[in-house]
Length: 460
Image 1 (cartoon, one colour):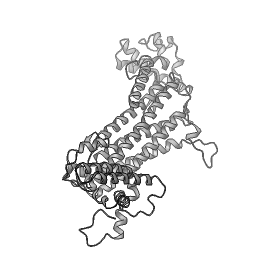
Image 2 (tube, rainbow, N blue to C red; image 1 turned 180 degrees about the horizontal axis):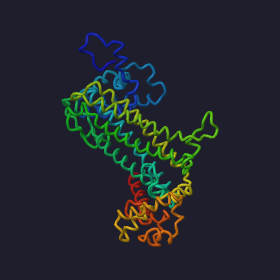
Image 3 (cartoon, rainbow, N blue to C red; image 1 turned 90 degrees about the vertical axis):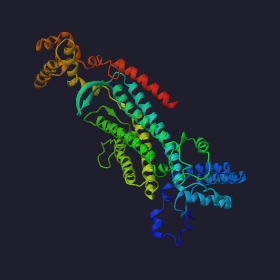
Image 4 (cartoon, helix red, strand yellow; image 1 turned 180 degrees about the vertical axis):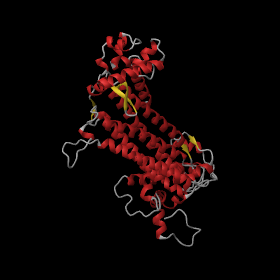
């Protein structure tokens, strides 16, 4: 069965049918296609195209199709060109000739846009829930080690000491931005395209607002020409998914490093790691490596649709059939990766003594000392030079910060006072950073409380 053909004397070749079919992948849109068609049937009844009895028969037939679709083998043997054609064929089998009225005043162009919007909306809601769950786990993990001190890094070199919960909150902020991007994408997704026709708008006086309210849309699209070829909303979702995967990939990279023998900070659970078929001692961070690897697939999905759309003339072109597989791929990978990341964080154990020893053995306190000199009146450039010489002398002599006594520090430079020697301990320097957003203990405690309030609003 085809939804077109009267103008043609011959049918499509087998090669063309095989090349152009989309049922093999757009079957994912079955439920939104049916829910949208039920709402459209009621709209047709309101404008007098369907009688109340005809509308009831069509709506009930659609319910029956959905019920059938939940059973195995529903798609077996189907040769329809796409899911929309399959649904209409099934409708005609159940409702009879009245099924031919369902496309009155409706184009497949707007129908496809509706189906995708409804499907993407559901995937966004799912991703938002998984993101919030991951963010909740990050906060919980940070609270498990409130006093743990780690080196913060720039250029992958030890830079300044920070609290472990401060580090976990850095990821919270990245994922909070991802959550916001998904919310913004959802607002642009959640507009009803029905009533736009193929490109010029419908000739029937449908109440678009009523259809939108029935299907849970925030409003209606404003221009029928735009709707026909618009996939911005799909790209918005793919961009938000790509940014989320970028952050997941960076988290994975950090934790692959921190759980390695060279760092030894973290112990990943057996449940999220695997072994080697040859080397008995191995415990590999495969879960994190797979998250890092799947990032490329989501970025590739965004790039694929972006390039598909970039040169298209106004309104619908068949190229837009290529929107679905990238969307399906990205949605599958982001949800799986978010679930996996949460499981990793939930089961990981920090070994606080190891990063604390790394911080104490290095010169992460250097900036603390320079700023103490600046607070005492030494111009910062000079303070920087003095502390730099202290570090160089210590490196040459193999001395750690803790090896310096207050008297030795004051003897090294008259700008130092014995009291400044307390800053040779990383934990003391952190206490000077109580500015909002800093790693001071009070600032971090307040940030944790704020993060939990933000999570509560996400759950609400």
